[in-house]
Length: 400
Ligand SMILES: Cc1ncc(COP(=O)(O)O)c(C=O)c1O
Image 1: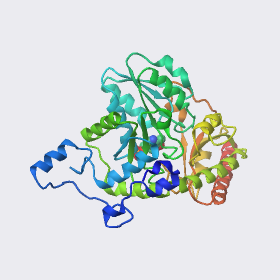
Image 2 (image 1 turned 180 degrees about the vertical axis):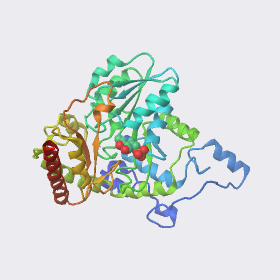
Image 3 (image 1 turned 45 degrees about the vertical axis):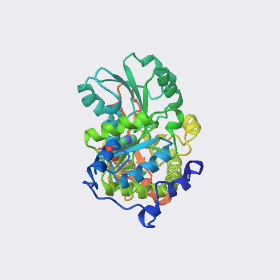
Image 4 (image 1 turned 90 degrees about the horizontal axis):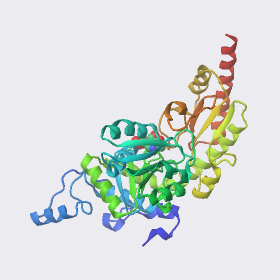
């Protein structure tokens, strides 16, 4: 049965499952295995001839990984997927697989901070030069491409500030120069945006976020457009010794079954909270492409089928202590990194400290919110009480 003709919610329920192979069990079992035994030397040698198609050794693959990777490849419309131990590992495997000493990579200025760190430290140390580019550059990227440029890396919407990139225009320009294109597609959870359909070569997913969906596992996956790209990714992951653990793969696989439903609720809740935030006098701007007045709305509407629950706000200038008073007293929003779980989170963000190709000059502090699956009215009440604390602390600070 080819699930690709069916809608996403249906495919997520059925892809990667084979009950007959597992004595009727709906879900594939969790394989805890390092060593795999062969009947004969001939069988061992046959396995070595197809290292990525058979079950040879725990680090190279196992049926739990295979089931997870099948769903991911189908979801993103790719040839095959490579699962690894975290989202960051998927990013670094993809960059290392496609770049070598003397190469140049174009990296979006709004990339996830550890991605930048990897470029500035590891890639630079290995003789790969990185140029950061404006997320809104679009087809203008062509002016930055040099003879030694080999890869274009995108992340859309951007980390912390949520600029939407013109992925089709960027990819078309990159293809004219033979570059490999890759994107961090975590915000869209592999459901709301399909980069490979726009010509991108590698889609990267921090499955730790929406795919696992319950804040209880680390998992990453890179989905390749074609066989040569898959082989480069898989060989690099194997050479680096990076593989996901079976229990984390199981949690990723389990999360995939409810992903579409959860994303819809995240979107509804996030829109309710974001619209309320727009009405608040403390808020200067809401950074969320799903809102009609967001500068990225037109591109988001053209390319995405929905929004997830992660967005930002810019507050009017207030002392740092007032922001802390707001956040410290929140009962439902946790203060913590990561996102994509069922629970709401909030965090101060500092885009002004990260960028090098562009500047961020909003006068007030930026907060990143992850709106979870709770009732949005309760979340709004929690934030309203937070704004009361912020106002009181700001007034106290002024009077002091
Ligand atoms: C946009 C984005 N990409 C990648 C990652 C990395 O994922 P992981 O924490 O699984 O390494 C994160 C984590 O916060 C992220 O926000």
